[in-house]
Image 1 (cartoon, helix red, strand yellow):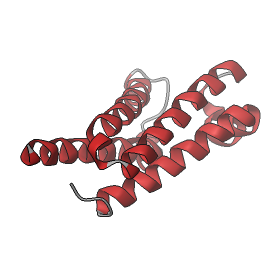
Image 2 (image 1 turned 180 degrees about the vertical axis):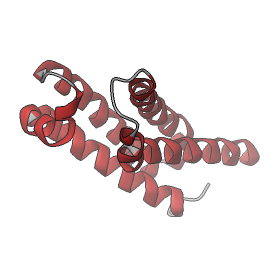
Image 3 (image 1 turned 30 degrees about the vertical axis):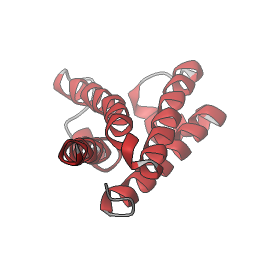
Length: 133
């Protein structure tokens, strides 16, 4: 299985981004909320920190997946699961009128693209693992 190809670098980028976002959410929930999510409802520091923990965990999973190609499929799949569920919540909020349709485009780079990339990386690694066996 490849080690330093495109999936490796995408995992480094996605993992570092998710870990950094999670750490900011954990350390500075009010500042994070004011900059990123102020239009989603009332500020709840506990909830922001909970989600920050999930982001930090998926960031670690993605970075670990980059470093250990044999673990890439399950680690990327777990990260994709969180990001996919998170994205589904965003779509649900738009579909039910909680957020305006413009949020779909606004969320594209930070919510949907990472999800799709992680799914693609997990599937690619799974296929590579099966081909190697």
